[in-house]
Length: 377
Image 1 (cartoon, rainbow, N blue to C red):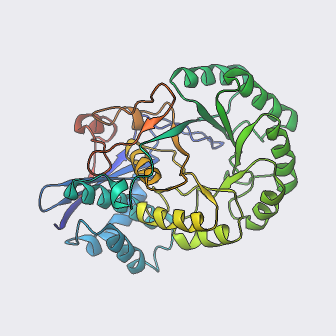
Image 2 (image 1 turned 135 degrees about the vertical axis):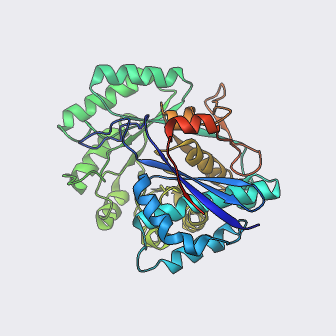
Image 3 (image 1 turned 60 degrees about the horizontal axis):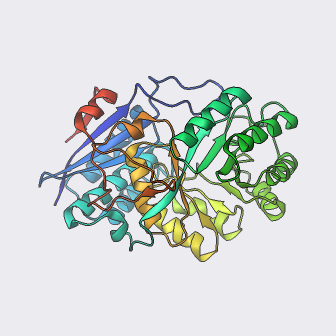
């Protein structure tokens, strides 16, 4: 089974604000789907957390290497792309595009074999997993209303992140966290994301340590990205003393970038993003390295339906997986598939067991968010 074409599908019209100072408008393109087609009529879907223009440029670079390749050898093919684009890649938009291609190839292999991707990744350790509703912080009253709506949608874990947390003063940060805990009660788990990958992040290890001590008083599950993403020494120092588990590494690409963070135990919880870091092939390698070093893994996913489906398949195949991130509300997750994701009465998601990623994209719904696609053939 050979690859004969790739469609690049930039998503616009329902983009969720990502928390950066300039904000994000619905028409801004931050996510791109890839559709890899074969000479036997099968199609596999991948997702990139990168704009369509960057993905298009990267696919144009990679297409001569991808055209005619096997559609059912995802690890070998994605590694070929990575090795062959060494001088123009080693991360960035090229690696992000490889991520989407890799996910699509796993989807294809699952469909060709009649098996869910989780089984092809090594086997199923679980059939359900807890999603945490991922939202941005806000002023106390609108934050309270948002939290109430997330709980009403069935989530039993919620992550709050970015502005205005960490952007005003310590007292206000605690007001926000107290508001969250009082609103959701003790039965809903809370995670806090400082958003230290924001440009010109002003805080260091002392702020992060003091903030972690405050978060511990509110039974917070983890403290995410409290420092800039390249400050490995700061993370090491913080992780050793924090009363709350420290999470990070969502921006890293390629398994080699994760190695020092794992070997030096720079974080308690590693957060690989398969739509950026090289796809499911790299995420699987990263997760087993982390497992062997007793470092927890929770996939990062500011996501699409395909990205969430990939995270679910990945999490099913990892022994110690506990959560998946679920951006909510998000039309790119909730309004693209023929069957929506549904939480059960206990706030868990069933991991799709159909072949491939286990979800089906509705072509008409995709057309709504991607009126113009770019084809390579």
